[in-house]
Image 1: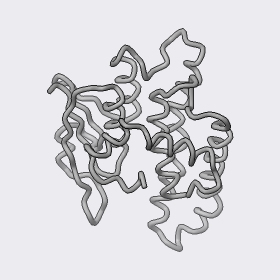
Image 2: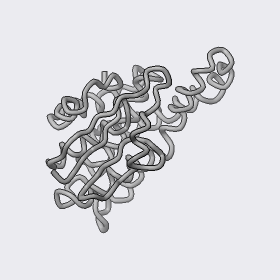
Image 3: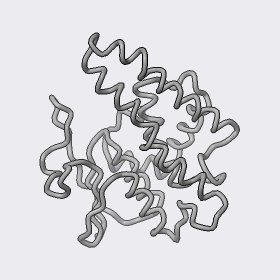
Image 4: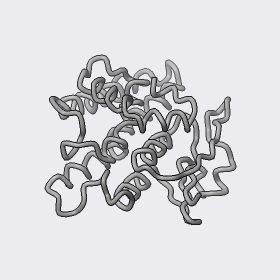
Length: 210
């Protein structure tokens, strides 16, 4: 088997497993557990990539890292680009926007909520003044963008949806999606896909998908 996904529990690599399933690729999964005290990735991942993070994908001896780059690259080069929006397509700009919005804009306040939340009351002023309002700003924008739509770009399921799925999971886990019915609907649609279900089976427990 030429593809190995080095998968860390409760991480962005869950969407890489989903990508592999949607593309119909033959791959193996090597699972890694977080340190129960620090919640950090195990040191073995540094043997694959200097940053020691997951996901990392091995294909024919070559290492691919950074979840967004992995999703974009494999979507364009596998299955004849079926999950991509290729150059020349009028929907490509929209596709690239959401593909990069996921990590470039949406995840920052959600990550800040996670880390600042560890400070307890010491972090409360920053949480109330900046972080929670910024999360609401992003989720409201996304909810409006998805009015009457099931997919983020091109009117069909693409890799942009796979990228955005982790944002929706993090939003549900850290901010709540109750006030964003379009995002609840879109997320439920993702989770109902057979490839998504197969990825959960291969990746193991994924609380953020609850």
